[in-house]
Amino acid sequence: MASNHVIAKRCRRCGKLIFAENLQKRCSASILLKQHAFACATCSVVLDYNVAEVVENIPFCNKHYSVARWSVEDVTEWLQQVDLEMLEGRFRDSRIDGKKLLGKGFNEIYLKHFQLSSMDRKEFQKQRAKL
Picture 1: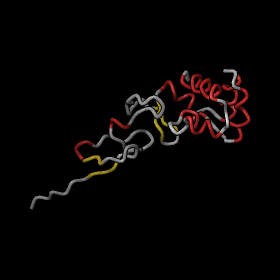
Picture 2: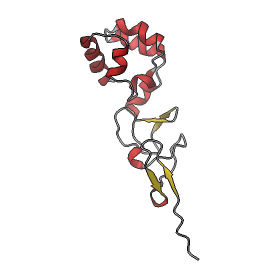
Picture 3: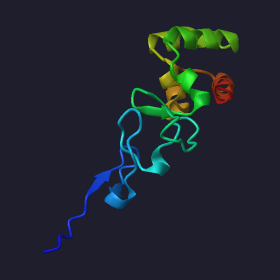
Picture 4: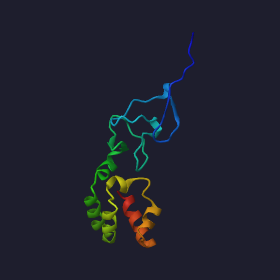
């Protein structure tokens, strides 16, 4: 008796079903993802499972991996280097590290919470995009 049972799992990034014939091997952090979803959390470039860098189960390309590992102090030092020292205290109080700084959730709404002028927000986004 043939079984029509289909094995499927959900992609942790997009939530879509991954059927058995499309399953990819696990990345170094043991996250099961479809290939399209195994991409840098910052720039969305599709990553190779064998060379991807993973920080706390989040994949990054080589360019963004070093920034993702920054501590809160590293982030405040970067703020000084790019003449945004007015943000140091707020970032330190909110414990913004490299991973949070690069995260997709760190957007205009988050910056408005810091009560920055639109000019300061634009400058910050410009400097962040250079990372």
